Length: 195
Image (cartoon, rainbow, N blue to C red; front, top):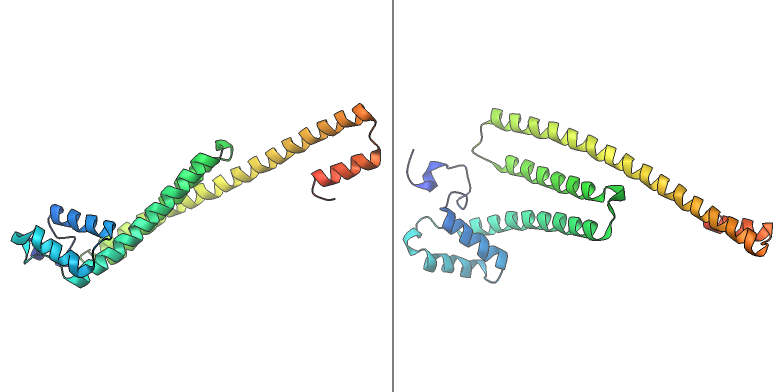
């Protein structure tokens, strides 16, 4: 096996085979999104002149940038969803678990995509990893279904609690001012959404 990282693993992308410092620099520049691809390549040549032969092509940087964008978008969406749920939802319906489940599903999806893109992986190893992923997805799906059932039960209980409170208020109103039965039925219909 060669000491040259470009020859050591020919199935991986040229950027994945780069030394960590260069790869991190490329990722930083791609995330900042201030340079064109040509400017980014020139920046790499200026910053790492001793690695000119190893530096990726413009098309390799473009492909890597697209994959990085997809991953970052998935992470941003999951993170934002978790923040919104954490800030606005009480934990009565276990909304945080729902957000966590969604983030795990996102991560599993990304992992499966990465497995499909891995060119240097033995087919048997890939099948084994996909099999494990399928098992974990099945477990996650069962968890998601149980969570949704729990959330529905909580919603039903909350609605029953609200209706009980409204019924008690209606009873108080009935005794307070001698409300007619017709008005009481009208109010009850409105509260139950029947009007």
